[in-house]
Amino acid sequence: MSLSQERAPIYEALQAFGKKRVVPFDVPGHKRGRGNPELAMLLGENCVQMDVNSMKPLDNLCHPVSVIREAEELAAEAFGAAHAFLMVGGTTSAVQAMVLSSVKQGEKIILPRNVHRSVMGALVLCGAIPVYVDPACDERLGIPLGMRVKDVEQAIQMHPEAKAVLVNNPTYYGICSDLRAIVKLAHDNGMLCLADEAHGTHFYFAEGLPVSAMAAGADMAAVSMHKSGGSLTQSSIMLIGSAVSEGYVRQFINLTQTTSASYLLLSSLDISRRNLALRGKEAFAEVIKMADYAREEINAIGGYYAFSQELINGDSIYDVDVTKLSVNTLEIGLAGIEVYDLLRDEYDIQIEFGDLGNILAYLSIGDRLRDIERLVSALAEIKRRFGQQKASMMRQEYIEPEVVTSPQKAFYAEKELLPIEQTNGYVCAEFVMCYPPGIPVLTPGERITTKILEYIDYAKRKGCSLTGPEDANIEKLNVLKGEA
Image 1 (cartoon, rainbow, N blue to C red):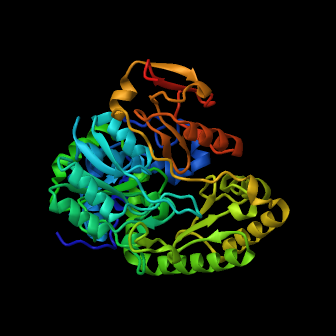
Image 2 (tube, rainbow, N blue to C red):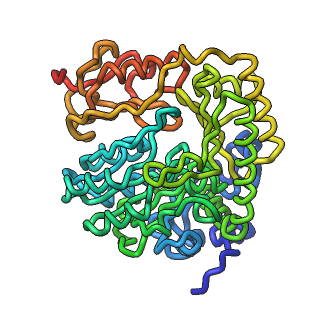
């Protein structure tokens, strides 16, 4: 079958179905919006008319044979993959399927510690054992970087029985490892190479950006189309190479993904893939120009440091995604999360996230130059109105974990809930993370230390949104019983 990137088969099928005026005696129960007029008014008639159930003319995501199958084939061609799976459970479900189909209970997977919570959640589900490659850390910025090739090689030599290596491509801050070299190391040692590309959709459709996972020869990649790709929130794509069985991977996807796939999400993936395939190169060229301009203007303010390719060192920072507008704020005496809050509360500007030392403004195909100007002006005013001495700021840094047991064993073990200040020395039995970005400070099976408790306390005082524990106020933590 000849493929044309101008097609959008799911969207086209929905349009054809809408013209037939089919009487719905199936789900969803709102019956094209008639049963819930307030919802129809909020979302619009087109939206509720397209919120339909899987049926023969519209295919089925669990076992696609027609329009969804064609949409997946078009996506695979656009991304340079052997096969693409449309995902409606976010990139979390794509990451989980990627990990679950690569490692089993008791098997090892090599990965950086600064992974998204979805990776650690997958390890809880499957019982695999993480082998951490501690990322290097930039002293000035206090952010974890990429994996050094020599560290990955050492991990493979120490754990030759490991089944896979997982790489962030890129990190939340836009930092990339030497993906081609890591893929070769993994393959030379009989291991799969997996890429979390939640923040790298645009790598496939632009020039002058870091290499994509499929171009680097990775076996699987989880791609957040809804981030920089323009599709609806929660829609994602999972890519595989020719060495991986499509049918085998789909079995794992179907273990955790819904059987009631949203056609709003599916059609948004279909339309967004078409948009990027036809116009992505030109669109992202403009995004790169805007990001470069923004960095120049922000750095001219003084105090802020909008960092980019000048950090490249050929190893732990092998490449940098120049579309990421990452800005260090510590020199103006404010934590990133404080600048994040001020931008929203004082200037009606919502950026992606702020951590203890940095902010990230996420630029993509929908941004405009006048909005960049507004952001730059607001940052200048924040420095003038709220800037302080740096001396009072806690230095942000990567905290190397002490892994005592596997995430699965700790998560399901007998545990006790203790006041957080009494947990020093215990083994954590749940997740603690700042969200966004969703990188765990603690995962089940890791030793709680004084440094970690100080970090959590400081993050709480600065206003970071901490999530994960059973106690929503993060005043207590679940720990392994009798493990102090």
